[in-house]
Amino acid sequence: MEEVFFSKPFSLILSDEFFTKMRKMVDDANSNHEQIIISSHQPLMTAGQHGVRKTALYIAATYTPLIIFRPMGLNRLFRQDITSNAYRRLVDSMLSIIQQYEHIIYVSGHDHNLQLMQDKKGNLFIVSGAGSKIEPFAKNPSSLPLWSDDSETGFFQIKFDSSGSQEIKVYTAELKDGITTYHVVHKQ
Image 1 (cartoon, helix red, strand yellow):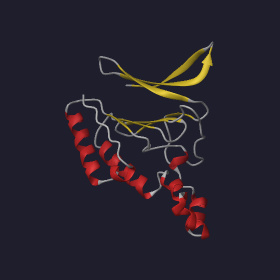
Image 2 (cartoon, rainbow, N blue to C red):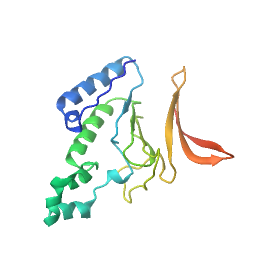
Image 3 (cartoon, rainbow, N blue to C red):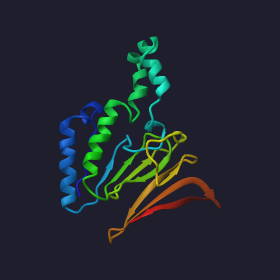
């Protein structure tokens, strides 16, 4: 099994060359019947705060005198959300690759909560960004998770056994008799 890491600036990752290489790597791994796990900081689906546009603030910073603050860093606030143009390109391009296959696992953080989503092909999308702090879900999220928690810190664990079965557990900071608890949130 080949492990490949990309650690380039966000603008270079959005290049056509990146998506061509990603498509080839996923196709090669799929042809070899390998389990494909893609990890990224940015989620492709989320019920968290980065999945919705901050409309009032966006309008205020775009169509009022506050526009002068965008070059000073205010525009970073908007680039972090799925609705931004660059982020939308990442989401659309990656989903167009992933959704050609079955049973890919895409793991991310960015939103400070715990989420597990699944598409129609059985691909899993994990958001595990609650390692040290938590944020509530968006009021009108762009995606609805199969399982989610925005009230406790924690992390996911993916276990594979020799038969190829997988089990996804989420460990939370909740203690029961001094022992950290976990929930099995998916089995395949």
